[in-house]
Length: 315
Ligand SMILES: [Zn+2]
Image (tube, rainbow, N blue to C red; front, side, top):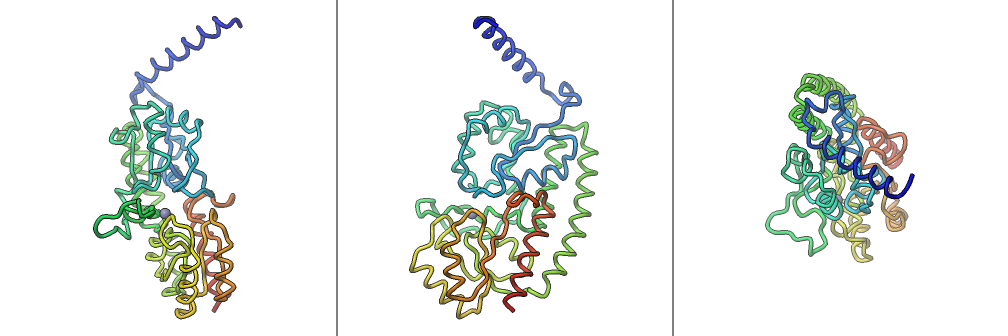
């Protein structure tokens, strides 16, 4: 094909693309699935539960990445350009990488405030909301409250309900389907929560330390006591003086478990483990943190299994 021909083909393709985009009402879309993009895998997992085969869903961040710090790749722009709905975690979790992608993708449907933008924090119980003014100047990456709220299954249920309502708004023809999927998810989650609560009951009140403050919602739900953090503040790497104080605290409180998110260096946690006799456990804050953890249920199965093993080994 000659260069000019190629160019003409491209222009036609873009023109047709625009034409289709402008006619992209639920009716015009017909059998086409809603294209959902999420910032994280956990939101994708919950969307998948209620969207079933009426949506396609893809997460920008991978489950083994620190969701605070994701490298913005050009390929993400393409995904966002084609999205009908963008689901974010919010509370500034993605502030370092998502806002520029949203503005640069040029998709009016998913701009903040548009019908195709959904911030899931609005549905969830948020912990650690700071009193007074907290700025990121101090390095704290949780200035609006703790954004790792999906690790309480009750929040998972609330988020799923919010997503189902949004999908129904965008695709009213399939509202009954989304409602049905939500009810099924709700039932399965209730059964799973009962199982998880029973398994964790003997360990209520157990003391743990976590690397990052990713764990308050999980700890609250299952009655664990997070007594300290390897990071001096969320987003600030460990310092020798803070690590020394943490070791003293763990010895005083007889804390024997250090939980580490998969994207942190294990050097400091391991030295804490040596000093205190604590088990260092790499737990998963997100779906996809390990290959076998492919959905919201498997995430809790995996972490609860690890925790029980660690508590039993240190009893
Ligand atoms: Zn965080």
